[in-house]
Image 1 (cartoon, rainbow, N blue to C red):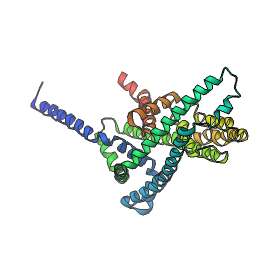
Image 2 (image 1 turned 60 degrees about the vertical axis):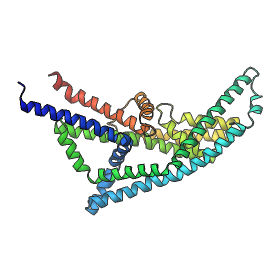
Image 3 (image 1 turned 135 degrees about the vertical axis):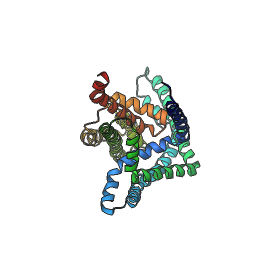
Image 4 (image 1 turned 90 degrees about the horizontal axis):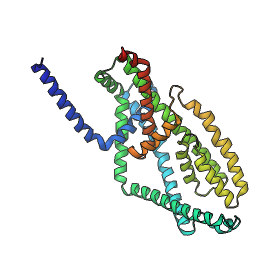
Length: 343
């Protein structure tokens, strides 16, 4: 029976849905900032809890946590960005003027005559590709430097959001749990799985990749790989790709040394890669990756590529995290909801 009370409820729900859509449109430009703020707040929440137990002030605990975050993230990122920009300029000038290998004609002359035209064509294509990549990367850094005000505003909003997520995290969680239609015990399980997903992806993927990139950087510096910072940055990105991982960057670096006549350095880098870089994934990875978080490598690869395409650069983190949360929800459905829905 259609009553006035039901009309009021339906009208209210329609208005709520419309306003919710408008709110989503208003917040759309800040989706990446909000998502990264949630990730950082969850990652640094244990540190915030440690400060809170000692200081007994959530505001000051959040401020101290932000100070640690700034020291850990922004300062190294700023210094590393300067080094990357300098090497991008040098790499672009070198490749644009003389190509990737200045003495490639001499090297190719040692190949069989049938392979020399293929090698020359491959080198021209490779030089063209590297010029485009370095040019695009340099343009990206130039755009960032040219829009420093926008960059600093984004960083301010990011840490401003993290501050309130840390300080008022318990209140926000309570509001979300009150609004959620699922049972309280399921809410706890869901939030626990989200926390596990974020920690598992960041610690299991990003920190392992960062460790491998740092180890590779040491090897590149020792054995004289040109533009070692750029190679190390590419190694970090390559380490996020399942199965092949760091081989995508280290093998070309070894071949570069070999074909430029640095055979001993190439052999040394290969040994370093096997011992210093490869073993990190075997020993550090299992300790950082939560055993409760199991995502197939193929899904990780697609979620990284799709995340970058959908969210931009931060998608290499957001994509796998969203995939891990989805897997966790599917697991909850299999273990908790399926029998109830079928019953």
